[in-house]
Length: 147
Ligand code: ZN
Image (cartoon, rainbow, N blue to C red; front, side):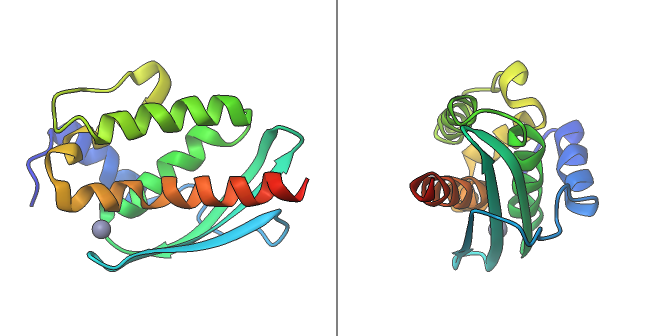
């Protein structure tokens, strides 16, 4: 098991056990299916936009607690935000995942996602944490292209 701060471990397990928005909403602008073969994580993610704002993100998936908690946290963070805000939050999370454990993350921007900061020390697990974020990026680009 990874050595993560106990409080952060709890935040991750809470999202894993009580995932947010884990029920595919059938009305969407784009749907993507992303997998992380190195761990066996899989998610299907639906995005719907309202102009330049994110109306909804819903998902379903299987995999490790890091991958599933990360996408749950993402939906909490990004639903209702503008695409510009979502980009800033995503950039901040990507930066944190590349920090090799040297950064804690800005809680004002990343909220519960700072609980994943410790994952950046484990290169094999970074893909788990990023799975949902890459799926969202892919889906939002497709959704914007349809508008
Ligand atoms: Zn995983």
